[in-house]
Image (cartoon, rainbow, N blue to C red):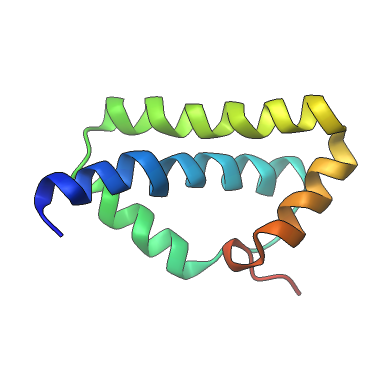
Length: 91
């Protein structure tokens, strides 16, 4: 993967999803978050400016907020835990 491709992947996938999943983690009281995902996030934060990272993370958070508004809090939380089990280490 080229540097440009890595940056695009970080912006379009890793950081947006991190914003989405981390918002769900706190809104839904999910106790654990995948260390593998966090390692990818940290790697991306090394190549993306802080202001751009914040912008993209907020985009992901708003994505979860929209889901929660559309289906309700409990259903949004259930969806996140069952649709994205790789993002969370559930006990």
